[in-house]
Length: 442
View 1: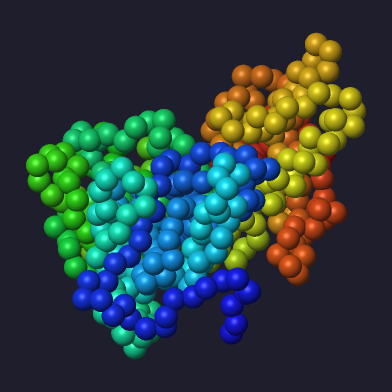
View 2: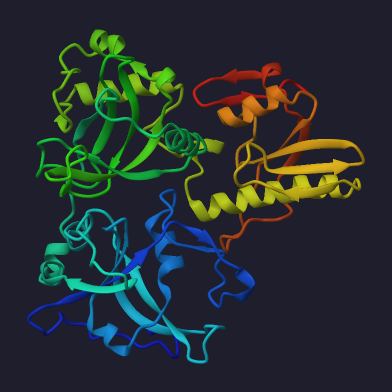
């Protein structure tokens, strides 16, 4: 395979120096940038826990002040909050224009490494280089020393299942942050974060299944489920920073509000051979209890969780594809009202609705839902439901269903069946799993 013209590549050999170094880019919380002035055509940069490794690498691989010696390195990483979160293997370096400077800056070209690659797994969770400079270097000798044969070892097909615990009596999640994370998993997104694994330090591997068990003096039961995205690493203890604790990164696929958890009484009755009051995180759910737990959890959620092939709005996990679907539905709804001489403003960020339409003294709150399915039911958040109940007669829902994609991966702008209706949540079937709303027959 040949590289594009103008792209240089590192040597295809292990770094010859005694100490092999990797390059790290230190990220801040995601923020928007002006796409018109960005030579890489980006709309945002930084760390977003709802985005995949590939998306995070795509928007953060440049623009940086880098010299040609960066090609002496084999691995590049993205860090946030002092810990390495994404690992890529460097393939090349390219110039990118910087409108603020005469000299161009650089962007790395590389392949994001997936969970299960030993070179990635021994870097994820490590402390990032310290200092104020957003570009830093650190020792990657362990990853560089791995041979191709060692990295090609396939992980076992069977995965283990673990319980991690949360006790609000000892430490509490921030209600606003947790509500936002619940809403994110409601809409089919992955929420990424780290969690304590108790005394367990070795057996957890990326891809293992994990359930979040709420303990304490209040409501007890299962709050969430996901998969481990790293091996165990050490960091400051969550209660006492003078001590260390074991952690692993987790991709949460489902997070429930406490009032919707799967009660511990049900767990004990249905799976009596499993320990449901552990002293700490990291206990194993052994077979066949693990399979029975998956079935019980699926029944509680009212949806399958083993497969994501069913074309429902909830399963739209590819962030780039999902954004195209959402943008098309939003554009179709806004155009409908602009064509009727309404003044429409896009306010989708930070509000429980996507747009506001104004004509004379009338005000409408517009909510757009896009899906590749038939759209017989759509996901609505608690915030959207509460707002619609508080503003009866002013909320409009536009559903663009049966959206198609072209062979090049772009959404077909002419596809889809579009319906507009009043959004009155209590007139249809509202299922409070976070929610799923089936509109009444129109």
